[in-house]
Image (cartoon, rainbow, N blue to C red; front, side, top):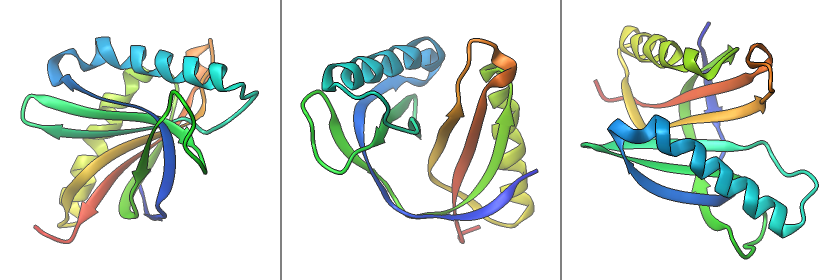
Length: 146
């Protein structure tokens, strides 16, 4: 079930790339691999949660994957996950189920008489070898425009 939330701005460090929308599912895992490599090279034992921001422009998707950082470090591009009012739904299970979450959130935004904002974001609460154990909070920013 979707929940209306207010998101505070968060400074993240990670990887920023623009990829062809049609190839996103093939290319996005590599971006997370690059983030994991930067985390390891920085010597972190744990930093998180990992967050992904997605913005679609035409046939391209800007992807920003990162972790909260309070200062720039080598290997990390700094960016901000902006303040937003968003609709959120928690997803438990395999990542292949995320498409349905996005469809549900988009329908709920329309039912509320709102418009989708600039960013969609995913905050990974648990990522496991057993897909059923994954927990991802999916957010879609909204505007008051209809």
